[in-house]
Every structure is written in structure tokens, then in C-alpha cells.
Image 1 (cartoon, chains in turn cyan, green):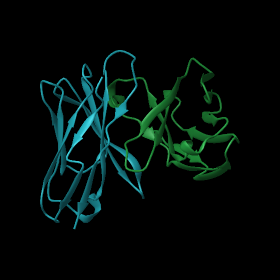
Image 2: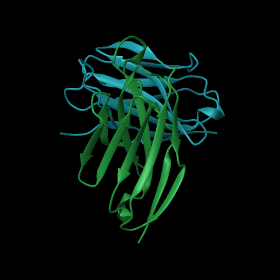
Image 3: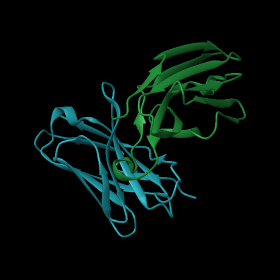
Length: 114
Length: 116
């Protein structure tokens, strides 16, 4: 079974621009969670989508948004980029129903804001 | 909300020794505790997990123990090998639902170095 894929793997943007990152979950998984990883703050939860609906959201400003498509693929968008948005953005795929908790991560998208 | 503390932040061992990483959590509602291994340039890889109805779980050289009363859990790696060198993260989560869907709260990570 193929793992979680994320595109692009690397991205360089300028302050004020916006960016869209993509995540394809493991086949059959309907839940996608997004995390931001930085050296200072570690791994922090952004939001979770299931069946095209956002079920949970972390403590990030409204500039961070996401969506999920009917095939479970997900995108996250960051508008008006700031230098502090430079991070590794990870998505994690899960079955998303019942008591099955396991989350499997993709390789991440490394975003650099200059 | 949940807070997870992880110690030590760095751990250096000789090949063949054991390594132990400890985490404490604050939310008594947490009942799922995964451990992840992250190698340079890769995403976190789930290596073992434990649920609150189990006190210990083993998978070859890796074991995890959970003490719900004290709110702490530990990762034990025996017979360490150089390829075990990586950053290890613990995490905690309550049952999925409400504000808990999809959310893992992570510790700050432990850099494990295994010297040949």
C-alpha cells in the first residue's frame, strides 16, 4: 500500500505571498490531519479533515486554512506569509472512524519564507 | 489542554546498550500514546503505540510502558544499533471526538545517538 504523499517537497516564498500544499492520504483513509514542525515550537496541530469537513482546529491564525476533497486528498493554504511561517508542514493520514487512532505521516513540505 | 513533557532532550549510548525515553502528560482523558521516530529529511514514522487499557507492549527490541496513575509512559529500546539514531517523539491523545479528532499532542523530542 502506498504511503502518504505530499507535494511539493520544498517551497520558497516571499513574505506577503500565499501558498498551497497538497496531501494524498493512504488509500482507504478518510482523515487527514495537518501539523507544523519548527525547531522552537516542535510539532503543533493545525487542523483535521474527515469526509470533506473540518472536525478540529488548532490554535493558528485564520491565515491558515484547509480543505478536503471527495477523494480524501487535502490541501492547506497559508495566506499573507510571514517569516515565522517557515517550517516543515506535515500531513498525517488515519482511518478516522471508531477507535482506530493510528496516524501515518507523509514526508512533509519544507516551506521557506524570505 | 493536554501538555506532554519529554526527557531527556538528547541521549547518547554505545551500540548494544539500552535507551530509555520518558514522557509525562497532563490530561487524564488521554488514552492513546504513540511513539514516532523521525530521521533527517523524513516525516515521523509510527514505531509503537499503547492504549490506556494496557500497561506494557513489546515489539522486538522496542517496548513501551504506561503508568496511568502517575500519568507517564516510557519507550525502551534494547540492544541499540547505529540505525536507531534519530529523533524520537512521544504523543498523547484522548478518544477521538469533539475537540480531539485527529489531534496528537507531542513531546519536544529526544535526539538519540548510538555510537558504533
